[in-house]
Amino acid sequence: MKIKYNAPVILTYTLIAFGVLILCSRAILADYFTSPASLAFSSPEFYLRLISYIAGHGGWAHLSGNITIILLVGPLLEEKYGSGKLLEMILVTAAATGLFNAFFFSNSLMGGSGIAFMLILLSSFSNIRARQIPLTFILVAMLFIGNEVISILKIDQISQFSHLAGGIAGAGYGFLRGGKR
Image 1 (cartoon, one colour):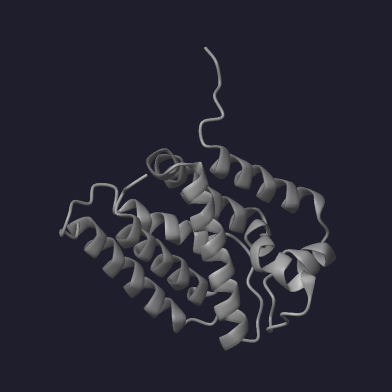
Image 2 (cartoon, one colour; image 1 turned 120 degrees about the vertical axis):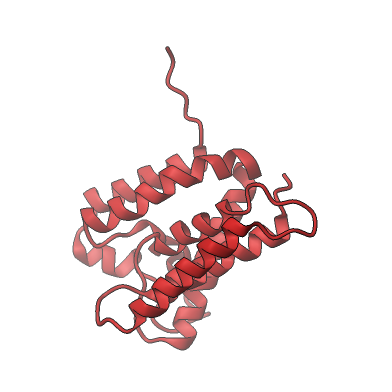
């Protein structure tokens, strides 16, 4: 039996995230693997950090929580949409979330939570038909949004904004792409 690298985008992201956590010090994580806390369009580092923050995680629990969701849902979506389109969705979601966060908040983001939630909501579109909204999407969206709104009331180090932004991106891609390759 042969092992297949079946979902190159998802598996490569996973390996990068593991590598960053294993090899990088806290200082390197803070400098290169957190989203920008403010808009700085003249800085090349600003653009790097708009994407690189999704590979940084605060610890093994943070990484395993995100990677578990991404590895469960991601390969199916990569097969459905193709590696190129899924990579585009991940990069656009990361950049848009990072930009909105820098514009509206003064903190930095770290981790792939927004990507995980983008994949969760995108997956509920797996059986979309013309002019129909899947009931599974409605239920997942209600549970997801309800949980995030309730979580906003807690004082913690979790950015519910990135979860919501990722979920909105996933829903948007699901509506726009409609399951087409």
